[in-house]
Length: 173
Image (cartoon, rainbow, N blue to C red; front, side):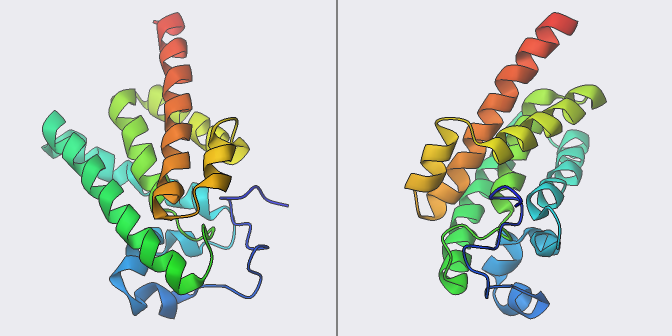
């Protein structure tokens, strides 16, 4: 079985959002990462990739304040979109909702900087912690059954990834 957050639709086997569902409401489009959440395999990982072009644009055309504003806006839009999409799907944290990965990985990329090795390592670490869900991530994921909870466990995974990334960067130099 694939880890929760990576396409585990077993909790609601009859709920399979499609392109029509994606475009039925703007919240669905946002929550499902502009369609990346509909990926038949590892939608969380595919959705996470959406953060990269956003980060490249922010690196090229925006300063620190705009980066922070973008992370806040994506997070708030994600809470709104996840609330509506979970309601419409009838599932607390459906695997097709990937805006949480996008927002949290933007935070990782903000701190990783523009070094490709740091971004790549940040990606691997973030996905690892988001899939494995070490404490307290698993407890938050299971205990907060709302749109804020959908987002919160991914930000905790981002925090773990950033701590490990900082340690590695310190060792490597």
